[in-house]
Image 1 (tube, rainbow over the protein chains, first blue to last red):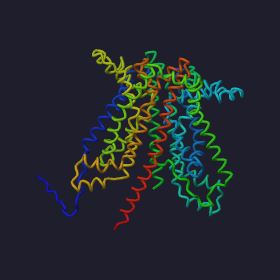
Image 2: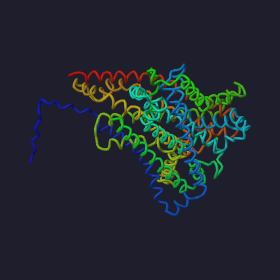
Image 3: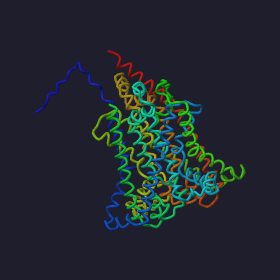
Image 4: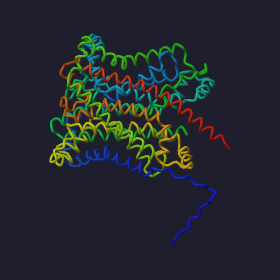
Length: 282
Length: 302
């Protein structure tokens, strides 16, 4: 039975903007070709491994040590960035000083600088012959070619994530709320602790998660300064490359899947944080 | 990820009322801490690149580029960017158009998937292409039979770069086009404009600065990518070395002046990227301010 559609001639329907099929088609095909199918290849390759093979690879002492360093070093670096990134974001949003725009632009340097360049620059700086490595060495601190070196590189690479996530949150704070807190007798410290910090907490956690996630997968800026000693200063991404160079594709795949699973978890965490933050701001 | 923050950059320090302003001592201390931290972690590494590059004078610096392998690395880097940037621009525009002008199921999932390459470690990004095109990969035997090389060759480098720089343009355009809505395109349609004309005459002028911003970031990453390219390149001198890989090889051979001289080219690229980015950000802010003023004006109408 044919259905009769009743059209109200006075309610003008907006015409449909053209190009839906074309643009969505291009998007989905290109996304599939460049990203999804290759990623699927990794998953399928993993499925070819037996459980014993997979578990044997990732429970190996050297691999576990690299997980410990990558995750532990990234947590330390992200925490340092949380503290100093907050101060930097606060200063950039709240205060005005000569050269503020230049300093603000400079925060993105770790994004803009190729990681290999950052890596050799940090190594030159913190090696025993370097500008900072020399004085540190005199104090008995070995910076380059140690775990400290790994953390230094991860601080460098993670800083913009924290600052750039916090800046809009701090800028969006209504000054009325702070004024209200102050007029109700709250001191400055109390205002910061009870009003400002809770308001920007989702941004703080998002920045931390982004910096942490990036640091765990980071390769270029770390490999030069770390010294790459198995069990001590060998990060997980480097171990993947080492396995590949030894033609141990199965081993490299198993470690990569763990890293990829971790990336997905972090992506999920960041998305949840964002949902939380939008829900709160409504 | 720089993109997510693009709109926020250079937010003016607002003149806070005295009751909520930090005491001058606090202000100075915090500013000093922030600047010292940035000097230590950002300025010094940048300065040291040039200091090491010019350590043995300008002659040694220039001699570093008098090397066919260095020139080959430069041209491969330019070629890679010349392929990756236009493809990702075309994709970014298509993705942003589909996502912001239409409502369809799976839209949030698509947005998340576009961001995926940001979350994946560069080394894993390189590995997945080895697993598809490598000797033991899916297509490996088929490619060998036809004598096509992807891994340890230029196509692999381009593919890995495409993957890594995939989201840059799209994620700059999507928030902006979302904000701008579809009213102007609707109006153009009412006046009889067709698809391509609408895009060229209405949408493109509205998004040109954000597009340029995405291109700048995409280009910087395409030229500077190291981890992913390192896995697929095979480090064949003069053939599959991009500039960052060339830096690594020179450094590992203890040719420090040449390594830092090559690195200084990339550092200049980074500085140029930051300068251009700041300029474009300023234009985008003005545009967003105008767009939201326009939206407010429309809402005020009865």
